[in-house]
Length: 186
Length: 186
DNA sequence: TAATATCCGGGACGCTCATCCCGGTTGTCA
DNA sequence: TGACAACCGGGATGAGCGTCCCGGATATTA
Image (cartoon, rainbow over all chains, first blue to last red; front, side, top):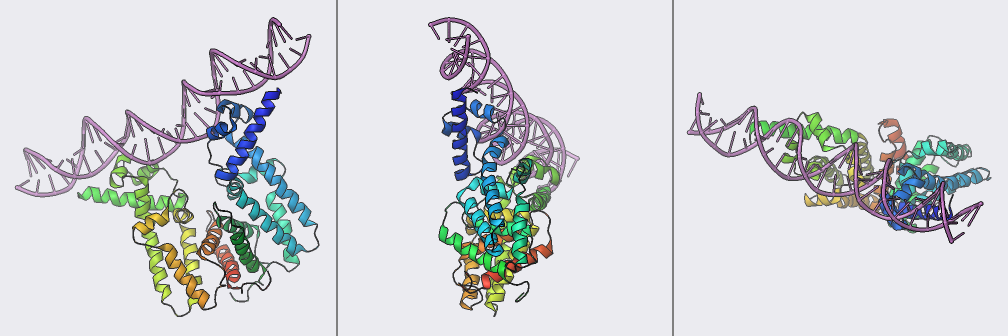
């Protein structure tokens, strides 16, 4: 690979990463090319399809989330591990609109792409959740889909404006809902 | 207005309502025309723009939500009123994908359209929320944006498959999170 | 029933966007 | 330094969509 090709590829990745984080996955490829200072053909050549560009960027972030999940899975306090991972996911999503949309499945099947890369996001979450439930830190009658939905809710709290105080507040509300025993007041 | 024009207008409204509920707001106008058994021109004539069609349908549903809010606002038990409205909103959204997207603001500013029609959705929610907070049924440190975000979360629980059991479960989790006192375990 | 205003169908047009392609250019290596 | 393969830019292409328009059809009213 020629040196200028490597440089351009890196420029495209950087511009796309920033654009996806700020504007979301719907940003046009031509806009990414413009910001990267290259032609649209250069983008298409390095990443034959827009989805390939998603994968290169989103899966990089997902990989970090998986690392975090694996590291937390070995922690002593299963409840703390679960809630810390929850907060970490929400924070990542809040700071990266494209990532949040990928979680939500908005026009790009992240689960499929992740599993193609050897990641199983749901399994990682399930492990943390199950451990926390066995430790009595999370009510037993929720599943991973419930947890994901609550994550989406926390992410929806801050479409654009990242407000850490609001983020902490809504996470606290969800945490206390998840911590409650199965049916005290229902 | 000619009789056949009225019939066609009704057919379009019905087809659009069903399509929006099932597929969401992104369904093409041409598809709505096809299902209604009319030409695309007929749709455009009755509703000059796609957004006008949204308004005619979505605002009808929103009107019912507002009626429900008003009726609940006079109830004795402010806490029960708030949570019943919450559950009602989630159920409506779960059964109507277009409505859920309208709430989320996906490509259509429902708040603006609603206020143009004399509705103030946020104010109605705020009234119920404030009453419930003053009654001590909902923690004092959440605002309407938090509540809306939690609604989105509940809606995300069932993208397509309406599962009442899962819906009740996640609503219960959120209810208990919202009921908790501001900082017992945080 | 005849005349006319209204309405219908669906094709035309313009727009946005992803992808492909080609003539010109630049890095690379002998 | 010269020649060639690799690469670049950006215009061309095609698909999907909303909106507009026109020739033909139909309801209405006298």
